[in-house]
Image (cartoon, rainbow, N blue to C red; front, side, top):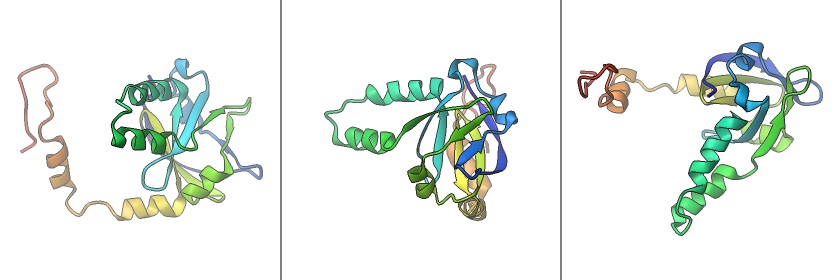
Length: 161
């Protein structure tokens, strides 16, 4: 299982190829076999999933009840434009022009690795994301994480308060 961490400022070459930083390549699980799927992410970025992680997510989505309208809509929007990419011998991937346009990426970009994916942001889009950080991050953390068991060794639920 791939678990990514880190922020990386990168540039596309003249052919629109992205050289994936070695720090991110080292975080990939061998099961990914240097293959990725890219799709339109949330908040006007792109999401780059190692192939093994994409397969898990695809399986989850394909198991949704497609007789439910919201499930169909979500599946369509999630899979729209998704494309398989493969690292070349130099560790580069060619990002589709339509995808780059969706994310507002021209030459420079930011890769943000978190969890099972790498987000691809325009420099401006990523700066805006950081600028728009919640005013009270502690309150957001309590709301989102307050019911999670922080004592993984057992002992029941613990709040952050």
